[in-house]
Image (cartoon, rainbow, N blue to C red):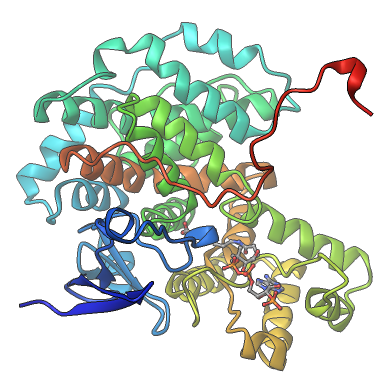
Length: 428
Ligand code: SDX
């Protein structure tokens, strides 16, 4: 018999079952709460509310642990590849060599993006933010791939997933090329995923193309670290939109828009902008720490804090090490990285951050690396989206395969009571 919780209300006793977990949070099943008590719950920001049961990713915010399908992120980041992580998140198991080879082939056969999509891309001004361009182009895939939209069979779903995994990196690279006014590159099926993305981003028709393996490896590792993260804002958006049986591309496009926000994936861009501001302001770290602590100042330390992590974000630890490796090997002395390290040191020694359990998150160091890799600031969140794509797809798949109902939360109404219409000449 599973545990239960008891609720007494209006002189009556109610009992609700506990939903067991494999690890981590257990929950109260309140499916009958409203029918039995007339009450609903309210949890603005869903800080204490589970939206679903999932088998994909687990994180322990207190211990700073993150598992993809049970595998610790540290082992995955060290030993796996982004393509293998895509398979793991989507299928639930690490692939055999044959399965991985077939998966890569299924992706490659979809890597040509409709030429007409270029007309949509080129209708944007170069000043357009790449996340807005990417969200639009992702949605436009619906029009150019109608066969992959309202799919239900496992085979058709697999085809839609591999189609999106193939075309999304092309669209990401195109947003970068548009921003710089460079000619667009096609996908090259002779290359593996990271090398292909790297050439689409940086190859110029006028020069011999030299591949920096260190940069390719860093990009693959960064994509792995961003691949999934439970029911975060953008993933919840993908599941919310998908719950209406909206097509895959439109659901993912909504996720791109949610990730764009500076409190979410847009933080990696906001971190660099913050560090640049601190540097241009003379580098007085304590001044900015005080601003972040002040109730009268809406400045926040971007890249710090997290809804779930009350410890170091394990991804931040790995990314910080990747940053050190990259800068040492590339011989880069980045003043912004030095400011970031000092800012982390000063913040973590300050009781405000310790008491509120605010630690560096995944975005604190990622932007510094992207910049070192030659990626412009406005592209950082596009890189986050590229990494998160397999996680979004896996979560959308789980929601649809589980036959989850349309998401439709209730509310507590605090507006005007019923009143009669007043003719305009009688209003004061
Ligand atoms: C991502 O959910 C995920 O998994 C997201 C993500 C993923 O992989 O999908 O991990 C990616 O989005 C990482 C987070 C990136 N965002 C930032 O770095 C932006 C800066 N961080 C904050 O805005 C904030 O920490 C959030 C948005 C990340 C979390 O906000 P919460 O959980 O809603 O916490 P809160 O705003 O209620 O803050 C709690 C307290 C407040 O103080 P009090 O009102 O209690 O006195 O902590 C303070 C806040 O003022 N606080 C900060 C702070 N973050 C929280 N104070 C200064 N600087 C900060 N960064």
